[in-house]
Every structure is written in C-alpha cells, then in structure tokens.
Length: 353
Image (cartoon, rainbow, N blue to C red; front, side):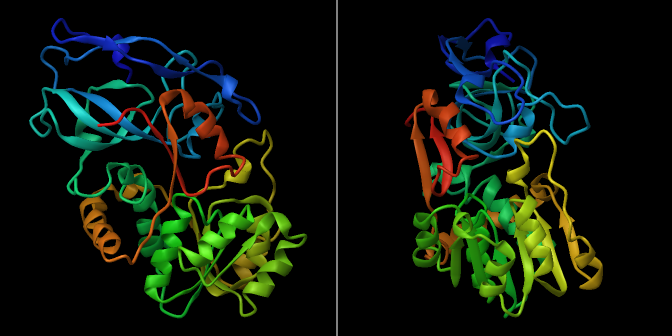
C-alpha cells in the first residue's frame, strides 16, 4: 500500500514519513515495536492504472490492529503486517492525484490507508467519499466512519433492541461503546456501561446519558457488580472485552438474550486466550451469541451516514475524541488503547488542512 514503491515518472516528489512495524509482536506490544522513518513519495499515479494518491489527514487507532502485528499461525480475516513495511488502518484523506473516474483531486475520503503522510491506493473502490464536509473531518475516523458503522450495524442488525430492554456495553467510553450506548438509549433501552476509570464512568453518565456506569477495575466480583446494576438480568450485551467480563455476563443474561460480539480486547495480548466457563448459560437461557464484522455492512454506509449526521446535528448523539497531534505520536496512541489511556475515540492528526 505504501507510496514509497509506487511507479510513476510524473508528479512532484515530497517527503513521506511512515510508521513501520519493526518486528512481529508477542505478548503486550510496545512503542519500540514500531518506528517512524523518513521516506519520499511521488504525487502521481502509475500510468494506465485507476489508482489515487491520498494525503492522509487523520489516522484511526483501532484495537483490531494488534492482531495484525503478530505472526499469524491461523487463518484471519486480515493479513499480518510485514516487518519493515508501513502499517495500515482506517483514516481520513484528501485526494491529491487520481486516475479513477469516481474520485477527483480535492475530494475528501475515508477508508483504509497507510500510516504515512501520502499513500497510493491501487484499488480505491473501497474508499468512501465524505458527503458532509460541514462536519468535522476527524469524525470520519469514528462516529461517521468505521466505529460508528460498527455500532450501528451491530446494534440494529445483530442485537435488534426493543424499547424497555436492559442493555450492557463493556469498554463503553471507547470509539464504538460511546456510540452504541447512545443509540440503545434512543431506542428506549436501559443502558449501563463499564469503563476503566472514574473519569470515564462520569463521562458515560453525564455526557453520554447512560443510566448507570461502573469502573470494572474497582469491582472485586464482576458477577456481583452486574447483579447490582441488572437485578432483573441483561437482555443485550455488546461485547468488547471477553475473558472474565464475558463469563460474568453469561451468568446474568435473561431468557432469549442476545450477545453481539464486536471485539475481545482483553485477549489480544495473551499468548493463550482465557477459557470461558459459563457457556452453559447460552443453553439454559436460550441466549443467541453472534460475532459480526463491519465489513459485512459496507452497503449500509450511506444510510448510516445520513442517519448519524442527523443525530449529531440534533444533539441526539454526542461524541468525544482523544487526539494525538503528529505522526510521531502514532505508536504511543495505538499502544494506549490496551492500557485504557484514551478517553473517547483515539485518533492521530497527520497534517492540518
């Protein structure tokens, strides 16, 4: 994906700093596993191609990227990063060169790009044009981008909430959690979220309008905590954490409850994933547990964008970002996801417009 290897004889050559993976990661990643290196980019597309060249403005830090940092011994939905090559993830960019009929120079887009200043996209069909430039462009790394679509599709297509149901979301102050909890409230659910600090708990209750929230790090017994917040049980669990949290939730599900499995961040840095002991609850309580991928719902992008822009303009959804300024801050920003350092959606500003 990196432009450093692009073919082309026309166009200005410019500096192109890049974030590369130095080595495959085992266990908990560190900033030293990545490096910001100098490079050069030519602002031209290969002759005869339908490629575009992007100037990257904002990069999204997402937990799934951790899986790509390890050497993969089993089949995965995305390939592992290659040591020495640029990282890739979702971002917001401006088109600076194009040979594709659907994209012209100056268009703002969101989609997969490189963790670098400029990226050549050989097949730009996966990019989405930004239809609401009046909104902050950075929102397309989060509430109007992949995390927002994840929350939207996971709630309405997988969990299928009904008014009056009891809804629980873990990692609730993160990019997806803060959005899905508010959407569940708009549906008429009773919403509780868990987070890793008192500051985040306060944010969930005061800014995002959750009915209740708790700091899971202060709970000696997660089962007892869930019984306290859900004395009648949980109808819907939006899963981001896995491990002991999932085990406790299984004991507290109601009959015919639904678990939408979005992620399991507690497991990403373990060499041996934790086992789950309470799966019998799925049978006893007739619970449906379903994993999903946002890539299965890309056909809903336009519908989702229009609805979410409406919610934002009407102040029905509020949104919090945690912004790291500068490409050199990208490694630390990504690592911070796994220690709960970020408050809200973590993103990196590459350059200002």
